[in-house]
Amino acid sequence: MIPHERSLVKKLENAPFALIGVNSDSREAYDAEVEEMGVTWRSFMEKSTSGPIPTKWNISGWPTIYIIDVNGVIRFKNLRDEAMEEAVMELLSEAKAQAKTDS
Amino acid sequence: MLDPISLAALATITSPTAAMVYCMPSMQTQDATEAVEEITEKHRDAERAFFNGKYQEAETDEERQELLENDRPKLKPYVTELHEIAKKHPGSEAAATAASWVLGLKNRGYDIESEGDWALAMLMTDHLDSDAIVDVPRLCSGMSSANVATLEKIRTESKNERARALADYYRAGQLIMLGKAAQSIADSDGPNDPYLSYNMDGIDDELKASLSEPGAAENFAMQGVNLYEHCLESYTEIALYDKIMVSTKAESSLFAMRNLQIGDVAPNVTGVDAEGVEFNLYDYRGQVVVLDFWGFW
Image (cartoon, rainbow over all chains, first blue to last red; front, side):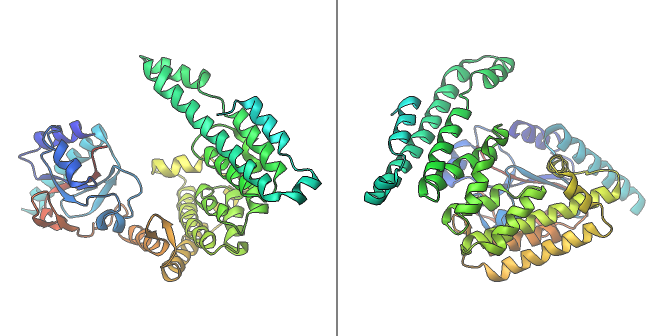
């Protein structure tokens, strides 16, 4: 998971794209690994799998992934790796087309 | 640690004759409880020895697959021994522990087929009101007629308050899932959710027929929502697991159903990043966002 996320963030650094984490690790565990694993994205720090955000969102499996378009609409759930990247690319080109029609 | 033969012998020795039970009943069940613990520990040790030994030393996926099929400790002898003890001590703590363990195995993906059916039957007849029943709702929440009957019986007949609450909660989730299954049958293009598709594989013909009736999707969904709402109002003091209350999980289940489906505008999220700075999901509106619930595991 993490290597793919890292490369996607790098690849899309100039695109209107953000990977936002909701992280379940303790502060110690997060700090111990964050540099070595090359984590460059921002996360909400929940410190446990039963923090307020995962509880409200009814998260029962980790990782859980939501893919959200430029209008804030949830478009895909739980796609991983290549499928996740394809979905993101699809939404980016859709946004480009939408911007063209709007102008 | 006893080997299986001496365990079987122990079970025989401690089998209660009328006179012995009259003289020292607590001694009897105490021994049986210990014997059950020994058997489950023995299985756990055998599993550990296998996974830390041969399995870990294997070099290819094929080798590992073959080891899993041929060399992994067989469950059947353990299950059979537990069944023997449980039959000799009906209604005892030992029987309840043995049956719960076997039922748990069945639902952890072990293939013991009908070998474990006695465990559920025993819990449902002899232990319906005891604390031994509280794991059953979670283990029997999948989509099948048998599971529907199990949950309904616990909800309506158990005298154990927590078991009734858990049965309500898991029955609500089952109804929602059945609603989605009925919808996917009505849509005729099949489930587009891999999780739903996986769960639909096990549906029996009787339940499938009820899913195909007109209005089934709406009916199941409505019953599920009503039951979640009942859980939300009624079970604020009953834990689902750890310190998470049934009412809390019912509330988040309803929240997810109403706000987190594909096509919904994602609700805002507010929290604090690793630098201690507060931020919002909505700060990223106008960008494609992957919201990733993750950790280093």
